[in-house]
Length: 67
Image 1 (cartoon, rainbow, N blue to C red):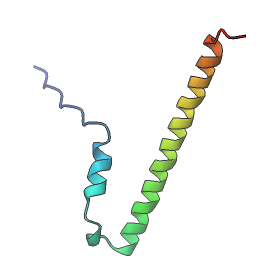
Image 2: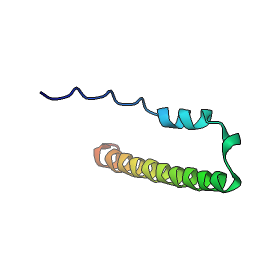
Image 3: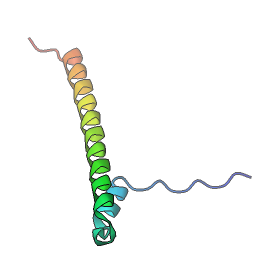
């Protein structure tokens, strides 16, 4: 018998969790690493946004019937 699947976490839940985290317990080195990881995530997000924007532009130009 198959186990029931766990519910998917809500979109943005991990970001909200990170925002609530107590930073006072982190060392300077840990905060530096956290910043680097957050910056890497921001870059990944920017790239995903740009891919979506490019795809949307391509679709708009393909399906536009203007003059």
